Image 1 (cartoon, rainbow, N blue to C red):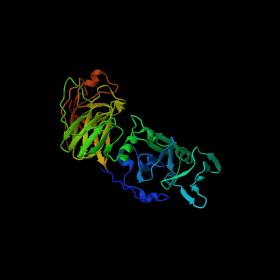
Image 2 (cartoon, rainbow, N blue to C red):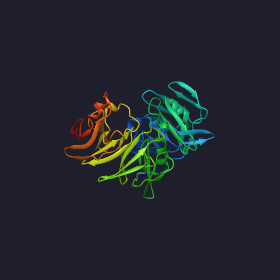
Image 3 (cartoon, rainbow, N blue to C red):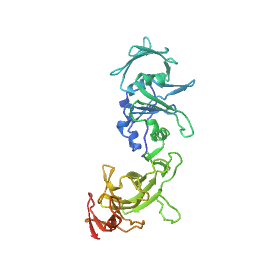
Image 4 (cartoon, one colour):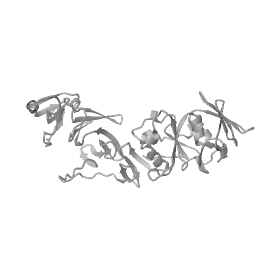
Amino acid sequence: MKIKIIITGVIFFWMLPFSQTAQAANLSEHYHDITENDLQNSIIMSPESSMAFVNGNMVSTVQPIVKDGRTLVPLRFISEGFGAKVDFNAKNNTIAIKNSDKTITLKIGNKAIDVNGQSIQMDVAASLHHNSTYIPLRYIGEAFDKKVVYLKNENAQPYRLIIIRDEKEAELENLKLVRICEWLFQGKSIVYSDRFMAVIQEKGQLFYSNYFSDFEPFVYEEFVEDKNIIKLGDIWIKTDIGNFYMDYAYNTTREFILYYVDGQSISRVAVEKAPIKAVKPYENNVYYLTRYESGIVNAHETSNLKSATRTNGQWVTDYLGKPGFYYGFDTIGNSYNWKINNNGIYIFGYNRFGHLSSDDRKKTFGNYRVDVKGHNHEVLHP
């Protein structure tokens, strides 16, 4: 998706109200592991951009200034971003800021800032820049009881970002959302991103990254099994309804992620603790098997046969068959063909987990018809 940014050509003495500057872009549309609620009461800015994010929405602003080692931010922009009303008295150059529980007053050229009757000395006086009043970042953040995070240029953080948020809310600075903000500030076209993977578009081509730094082409590549190589991720699966891509979060959660890729439309189908080994679509659902190569937590409460249904753009998964059963593979890892029709899923399986003796477990070996919904099956050939 390309983001259209409108930059105002003339900036008046005070910024226009946010209702006039807000753009369609919202961070929650680009980063799929965060919600609009997580972004409430937050402002993200950069000294390198005339854009900002207020409550996740991209808006135009005058950008922060770094002067003599101090970061200065536009006072009205920050105040109105947190819902406060700002009044400027031109006769004596004083500013009054009010919201539900705060009254903040200060004067241009003066280091004092008064918060609910308490006077605080800033290290730099309030001043005019670009026809807007600026004060040090730290003091306006503290005046609104906010957490202020300033991420400076580093090898892993090449873009300077300012994050102002509620103390007890989501720690935005610790999410890969930070890199998403950088790309949006830089004008990159983000097609999809979550905590595992990001996909961008450049010159009509898609590129992906698991590390949110170096990108590689994101195109279908036929998977050819090699007995000498175990490949857990970066696997494409072609089906009748389109392509699926399986990622492996080796450097973070060690989880397996299944994506549905339809051109430039990408959606996350499932996140699993065990490798995804087979994917079959049928009608409006997707069915897949995981393989318990090294065990799985609470396996007696679920199965390795799953279904995924897409509703309003979101995939919802559930296990099928009976808890504790293991479908599609035998005890030494051999795989079996399986098919789906209106009557159910026809597949080999056995009760792998639970308090069964070896002999009793062998008695459960057989072909089963598994209901396409719910947690039931019936044995066909014991």
